[in-house]
Length: 349
Ligand code: KG4
Ligand code: ZN
Image (tube, rainbow, N blue to C red; front, top):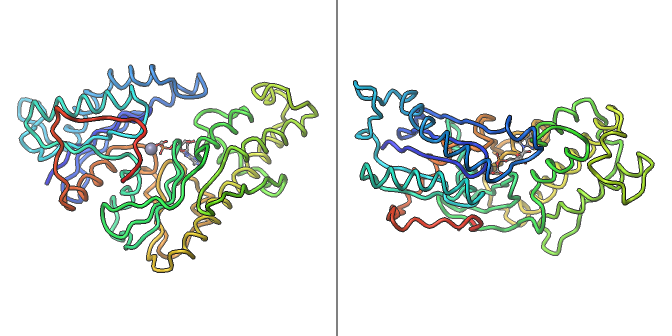
C-alpha cells in the first residue's frame, strides 16, 4: 500500500510518501528562518506560508519518490490513500493541510485518513528501524504544545495517564530561551548554550501535582525568571525581555544548563513513577520535538527505551504516513472528505 501524507499543524509544511514500511520520500519545508526574526510563530503568517508552499512540497514528494508520469505529472494512480494531520495545531495552519488533502482525495478519488498529531509523533518510532517498540508501552509525548504520558496496550489504542496542567515542556524551553536572549526555537538554542554551562549552578523546584503523573511547567518558568532577576540585581517588576542585556555569556550557559537538567529530571522522574504503576510495560517511547534533545537521550538511554531518528523528532509527514498505516491495519475506516472536521484542540483517543 502507498500512502501520501500531509502535515501542516504549525510551522513546517511537509509531505511524505510511504510504501508499506519503506519511506519513498519525506519533504519538510520549515518556516523557522521567518519566525527567528519575531522570536515565535505568528499564526496568520504561518498559514499564508503553508498556502504558498504546500503544492510545491507535494510535487517534490512525488519527484523524490520517483512517482512522476512520463509527462512529469504526479502519478496519482500509484497512491492508495491520503493521510493528513487534522488536530491539534494552529487553526489556520491545519486548514491549509486539511483542505488540500480533502480536495486531492475528492479529485483523485482516494480514501482519506485524518490523523491526530500526537499519534503521529508516537509512531515516528516505527520509522526506518528494524527494532520496533513492544506492547504494552508508555509513550512520553514532549512537544511545543503537549506533555503527556500515554499508555498503549496495542496498535492504535491510546490512554492518557498523565498530562501537563499548564505549559508544555517545549513551550517552557522556548519561553526561557526568550528570557535568556537565545534565538527561536528555544529548545535547540538552550541545548547548545547548555553544553558550556554548569547544570548544578542553579537549583530549581520540581513542582508537585495532585496526580503524580501530571506535569506543571509554569512554576519552573517563573522560578528561572525570578532567579535571573535576582542574579542581575533587579526587582520583580523588571521586564523579562530586557534581562538578556544584563546577562553575561557564562550566566546564560549556566541558566540554560541548570534549567535543561531540571526539565529532564522532572520528565524522567514522572516516567519512573508511571513505570512503577505499570510494571507490565515492555517499552518506553519518547516522541515530539523535545525528544531531539541530546542530554535527554543520554540520560534516558537504556534497553527498551526508544527515541525517533533525530530527523523524525520534529514535525514531518513521514510520521503521519506510518500512523495512518497502523490505523488502516487496525481497521479504521476512511473519512468522507466532505465531512472532514478539524477541531484544533482535540485530545488523542
Ligand atoms: O513536535 P514539535 O516539532 O512541534 C509541536 O508539535 O509542538 O516540537 C517543537 C518543540 C519546540 O518547543 C522546540 O523548542 C522543541 O520542540 N525542541 C527541543 C529541541 N528541539 C526542538 N527542545 C529541547 N531540545 C531540543 N534539542
Ligand atoms: Zn509536533
